[in-house]
Length: 259
Length: 322
Image (cartoon, rainbow over all chains, first blue to last red; front, top):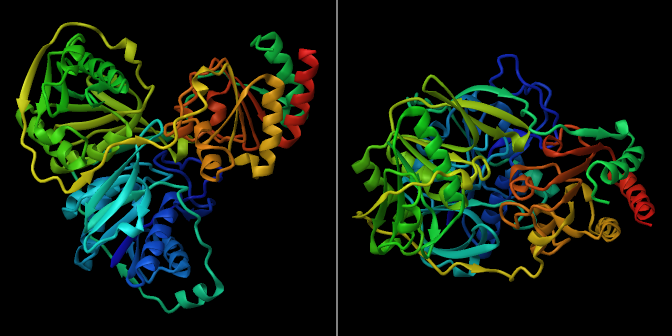
């Protein structure tokens, strides 16, 4: 069983974002980076599936700048077997079609059984790289998977549970190879052990210098900016939470007339 | 011409499709394009007559035996067939979980991509600029399309109002579409636990997010809810951690509510949460991060430690109610 896990490096969730001078992206110079949240769950599902079978290989694939290698190293320390780093300087200037095409070229020869990825990135949030990649590789896909039924793994099939909206769910059975995008929060993500960190140093990371094809139909990002406020928000307490609470009750009484 | 997708389960409409109709009609007016609705189904869908009551050029029922239950392969094939016959300039859909699942696949077949989850668009002399939320709602991005038609655009729930979809009278046509091999076997959709708590009828909701930090701290939010006569709710991470049951979850995968007062404690305001509560009459946000997107939609905001604010709130509310 060979499982490829797509993982992306994104700005830290809690980072204060500043917009770059050309207004095309954020200023990343002083923003700490982390692994995209749902991609971490994708890795965990892959590792658990491999452990359940007792054999196999988990390969982490990351497209991003040199610094994104941290994501791969961290995944190797958690138990992935090897990495593929598709090195590009400006992944934020690429459209989802270009990203998927570039990944497809890099992994086409891997003879995989499964590809797992997060359901979307927390920065660009295209939410489609996995689906587009599956179509390019001519394999079936499932999005927003919240459970992988490891016991169901047959010769070449697997049952997964998809999340629908408003509290509905649905099981699907897939013939492998297939691609699944994984929802956040569906399992407990393991930490890297000291042994894992040591072992990771000996694991292979294949670097790919891709030739990214230009794409005539790419969506063109014109400008990034702080959201326009639709509401006039009254900020209360001026940084003092207790004073804010007192003011709030007064407002709820006199203005909103809820109390 | 614009094609708009009508989503349904067993011929029962998904209401966000009316928002998609409103969006398509708006784009159609701006660009001088007519709008046709497409309903994939395995029969002469009963929904056809219902959708025909909107101002549309035509309602197309894309029919094939394999379209009774949704699969991405089935829907992608049906759409590919329809698009090849209709040659639309735009394909417009509501950004639902189902659309996320198949729309990028269809777009790829036409060497296009999906311009997804737009919250609005603007028109300047026939050139459209679409706006998407990025970085978990912290920033907006203006995006334009390039290349040849068809363009695939999806709009976030709430970007257009379904009751703004203009009524009219359209003809209904059933078209047999080609659907090839379906590589996945779907089982019947089901509801995990019947929602025992119906938050849609709550007048006041106190909701907790990651900022509550631990399961033990839920008690303080409960105490505030009790003082207000409110129901307790949560954002997704809280329910994922089992600190509150899943039937308390607000957002795209939980319940959609519109109470008189929504008090968000330690909720940053990711899009998936906001779509479930933004129609509340009054929104209060307490969060230590002044940049949290929840403040963009709040009427009242307190930047600070919720563990300092909440005990004072409880005390003051009790006084006010006494």
